[in-house]
Amino acid sequence: GFPLLIKASAGGGGKGQREVHNIEEMPALLASARRESESAFGDGAVYLEKMVEGARHIEFQLLGDKYGNIIHLGERECSLQRRRQKLVEECPSPVLSSALRQKMGEMAVRAAQSVSYTNAGTIECLLDKHGNYYFMEMNTRLQVEHPITERVTGIDIVKEQIRIARGRKLRYKQEDVQQNGWAMECRINAEDPFNNFMPSTGTITRINFPTGPGIRVETGVYEGFTISPYYDSMIAKLICWGDTRAEAMMRMRRALREFRIMGVKTNIPFHIQLLGSTRFQAGQLTRALWKTASCCKRKNAPTRTSPRLPPRWWPTATAAAPPSRSLATATATATGRSGSGRNEGRKLLVTGY
Image (cartoon, rainbow, N blue to C red; front, side, top):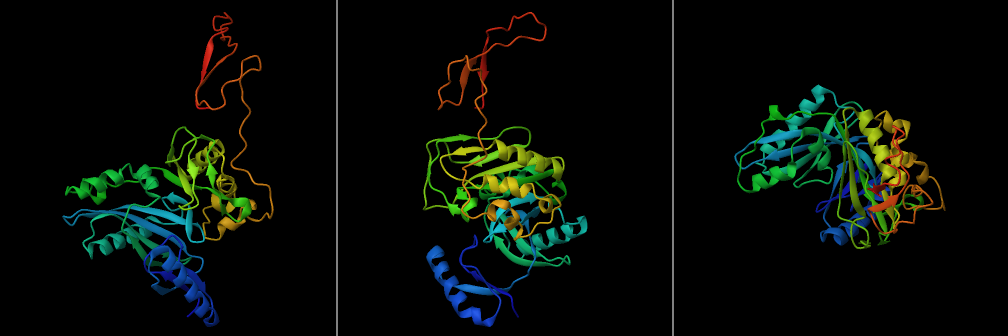
């Protein structure tokens, strides 16, 4: 029965997918899904599956070698999505009990063993509000969100992929895999959250990455880089780790406010609002949660590329530093606590600007 989900057979990322709530909608939505699938993947084949409403997206990271050794590295929670594209991921999930985690992990390993799987891969499932889980698909590749699993387990998944490709045995057994702390990832996209997440193109004129304990940024963009309309809108990944979920959230909110990208619009303001919501902080994650961010409710709102940049802090008596430099030397009066004045007039190195 309904509701159903039409899905593209040849791809993912939310493309070629349509929700069907009654039989009258089926012909038009089926044709639409096929057209999009053909355009995106060169294959118009689609299939139907039962849509589990209000479900959470839980996936298990796997590693398998050619000698039959397969382990899982725990789960990732990927329920926060827009148009079936993941926005925020975290590891571990805030809702899985130890017993359910073990049960789902063992299921994922058995599924991979049944096809003698080799490489890094991910078993993806839907988890309903009653604790029932349903196999959805397997991604036979390295996923965008793999860094949060690396941060929590301490296992370099890319390195293990290379070792597996060279014919080496896995260096880890299942009992070696331990989860330490909590990690989150925000996908930084060149999109305007104040204008229905329209793609933003142009040249990055200034960029400053956040730093600090537990902070990791993965990106390929830089000042002078041109954002093209022909590729995916994701331009960076911001990963934050903490001893607890609360600490990971705190570091993520700070890092988002320090993340500066000028020249194109980004979804950084959206992430800041989302992480500040009470439902997110309580771990009540659903695909519809993104709609609660206030920027998603405003129409014709003024847009901003990122949180406001702080004013230049050096004294007005100092000659202005070149605006394009990432390292500048400024002369300022700095008197030590001893009152000796020996530091007066010394040059200070301003880094990270």
